[in-house]
Length: 543
Image (cartoon, rainbow, N blue to C red; front, side):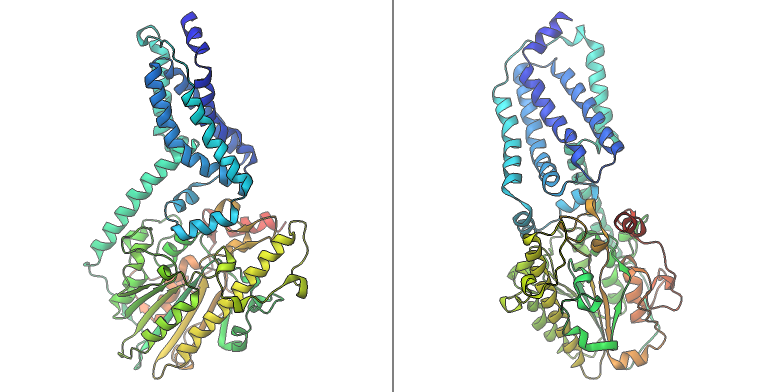
């Protein structure tokens, strides 16, 4: 016992280093709004056990080896620790599994804008201090004489068993922030490489797609996927500011759905859901069943992608494999321009009168933060001081109201983009045309608290609810009188692939008529946002 005490006396800095690396973030867990009391206790207990086990084993290694081990621990924990700490400081939440995965797929430009918006001088200072302290500790550690394993076998073995159990059991290791970070990264890489392999392999497998409604003239389907659009900031949905002056002119020819919910509040998982048959409880359908481009390719369509959001032919994100299946692709994000850059490309495709059916998916940067970068200067229109249309609230200071002004400007510009898409389709001759616009997810704009943006850890109704708009040429509307357009149907865009299949008149072995928004056999289902029910989210905010 005396030799253990002698070692401990010379390892005070090492003790505080381990405490700092392993227990500082857990000790801040009470600040996390998204963690229950049980979650906070579990995190602290697991990290406390890991601290005890590593501290115990450190008694048996030399000073030199310990310094090397602690330097490695510092290297692997400092990045995830800084991310978790920064997120906790500016959002008051701890990152959850889905958000950790999203970190590995966020493109550079999006990351820059995110950091520019959220990172304050206090958050920056906090993260820098957090990173500097353990570096100083490693440099000032004192040497000591380690214990002999043969004299304390039980202590040594218990330490080994505890570490192996914590690292090896997934449910337990999630409580240790840096272990969870790297295990999530590894599982993400394994999953996506398997998905890419399976999707590529199935391109040569037979899968029959029949068209039940064949017309004598070509059909053009344009799907416009917006970004971070809060439908409650659209005058189409009753917003007092006139943010949709152009779309509002279409009247009843524009079908505006009132009750549509996104399956997630982050872009990548939403796109994976929109373009595939993947669903909650059956994520394997992503690689087992055909995606949207595959269905249209097999039906003989010319398929196109026009994206003003980054995607990579090198498959850097887990939805890139779906985009890569388009026969013709235009990656416009490299130009870093506003969304009107998509319009000339769309017109070029539409002017290609090759008498073939077409599917064109347009992915906009839309209303993504930072909002002031989403529109040209001629769309700087709204000013809360002049119109008085931004209601006062305890969590809306002058800065918040200015941000709402900028957001509404981006909604106004988005209105012009969608209008121009429709105008281009209206100019087509001897072709049927359909446009569907929906946002990937919504956005919170100081609706309930001092927060703007979207984050699964802070999921709210306005993040979950999305605009969903359909326009059809008169010829196609007359041709497909079997379709049902009930604007009040409760619907999740998780089932989007079935609805588009119905619009195109497709029939295939996996098609489910009851999940099409436009089917007479539609059956409403419980809607989930991530793993939370939409009703549960509403009850939390609308008590």
